[in-house]
Length: 402
Image (cartoon, rainbow, N blue to C red; front, side, top):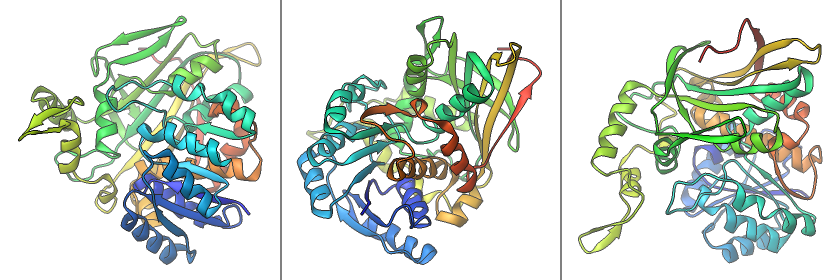
């Protein structure tokens, strides 16, 4: 029997197991594990109340490959859905190889001591997973994840060649806090403060963090300022779609967020190197994470919508130049009503469930390490429509003018 072990009891893990429980035919057995079992137990109680389905819970230190492997063996997990921290990707992959379990995550590995977002550490596992007859699916969130599937759906159905790609991530929600992040503060701030990079003419172009911005009018949200950033799907898309001449990633931030972040950077609170405080080492960013609001607590107060999508230009199958925009709009209050979590967690947790469903059902299969864009986009796109993330697309009159 298929038994899925979900590691990570934050907002994304909560959404994923709620949605898995709503699809009992695909996921007959679910265990949720994290370092703090009480968080898993609280989510399990919510799952039972909302769906009538009982899931198991467990405690595990995902930094410890041996302990993770022991848990996988003890419960007989066939698939591991890693919704923990990106630092733990490799130890969980090691545990899967040791126990013969398939693997899925939503974000690429990064070392704790450097904000470096690259796939090469995980791509290096390809031959080991292939030789073991196991599948590892990387980046099955929204971005990365759905954005790659969106791109490949456009390529499959509308483009003979994609020349440029822009990924636009807008969170138009308001949580009522002076400063808070919508997912893990440590990961969020590391990502935002890292230098921006985009792919252009076969090379990476690096610019200072948050130094390039543009305005864009997002449907159901309105005009927002978005900033050029680096995101890991740019690396995998550039590899698997070498035709792309330029690929960029944009994310919206409000002025209040930018102001607070700038002050925190200026006073050293976003540092990831340890400092000595009262005779012991602490990492300023980790201390900051401890005093900021827990993202999973923001669901009840967050209002508004997200709008995330891709804009691609290129040559259509008919030989004509075209620009197409494919996107999803998600409502924070609707997400909270269904799963008890806001839309940022929802838009990552639902694709994690769908990616796992693709693997469990055998719709997506293979031995080795794969990115989302290597798979057939159609069944995934169908499940997005069926499970809370409906998408739409339209042709734009012209490419972006920036």
